[in-house]
Image 1 (cartoon, one colour):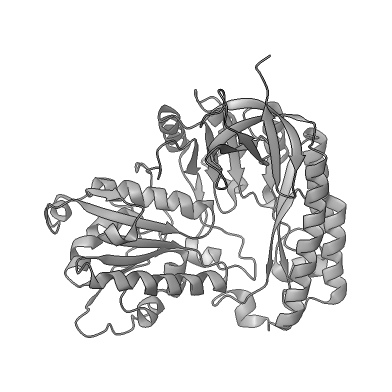
Image 2 (cartoon, rainbow, N blue to C red):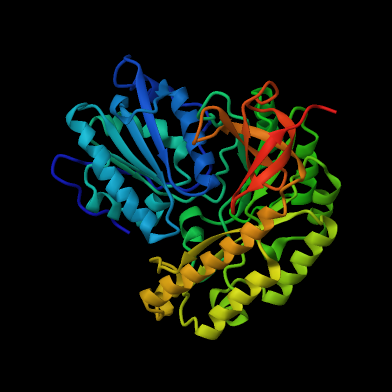
Length: 477
């Protein structure tokens, strides 16, 4: 695809070069080409999943090597990056709106650069600058290593478009930078890309094909996080449990990360139901550090809809997996994704989703109405036949049903003793903290002598809401 003509006075540099990653170190020429020696600040805003959060930390690590410091105030920034998601159209519209607002800061700071990175940049490519000509950098998910190379040219008015997908890029050797002091949860991306090609999903087109990070690199990053005081490591991948690197399996990797001294908890997201194997369930059940929580995307409770989605499994296989997980770990929490209103979804097919919600009784769910994504199989070949008002009605119904189920599950936690990890101060009060159970339930605890960021402590659950528990710290026994 050729680029749209840039606006007058705004030349466009295109770099689309798949192949071996460049050296982790910044080239001498790029360092010498820094605009000036004044301290420079970057404001980084992230939309989307945990993978996007991890990628933002990766970019921040690259930018630190370029002499940038992070700021939480976009008005003080010399570089603004919006790291994006392309899964839903509303997310893209929100990013364009936000980019337009932030571009207004260029009037105050002539040297300010604005970039859009991530899945939306990859999905829309040239269209980003057609719609938002004030954007200086458009970088896809495999271009972060080259971020520093683009900055001098962008500062000279040469906007950069770098959306090459690279089947070998795993960012080995680069150190992500956690955003805030006191962080107790760290992320390690163990796999990039997706080979599933579900008919509704744009991810394989924005993230490329599956490739695993070498175990040695994953363990190096886990040890580095532990040395920095991180207590919980989240292993990330688009279909994380399909991870394989040479002879290393996902189950073996889980057990190896659990051996890293200083790491107290291990989570992973998001596994694909089709790739959940017995040895992974066994590793989870036998290893105390591996959290007893699985986010298991269902999408639909109708076999016919799952077939149209090309998910590769049916509801019987999904239920067998749920039964296996609960048999091995009776207290496991299972969360999910539900997509309503997919092409030709009938009332009967939608009812099957409601019925399966009742059968499985997910602890929590992320629920969405289908929106057509350009470039996917369904957008090309399957008309979006379900009216918007029907989609909204169905979405409201699954949300209400899940809220009731989640409330009933939460109510059963009252009176229980739970081990929680204190993650942050509460948004509602500086005298309260947000902690999480092994099963990923949020617990609000009041301040106290034993309550501190990174602390593992026992609490008694005193009351519950649909998605939040409230606990009282217990004295050590």
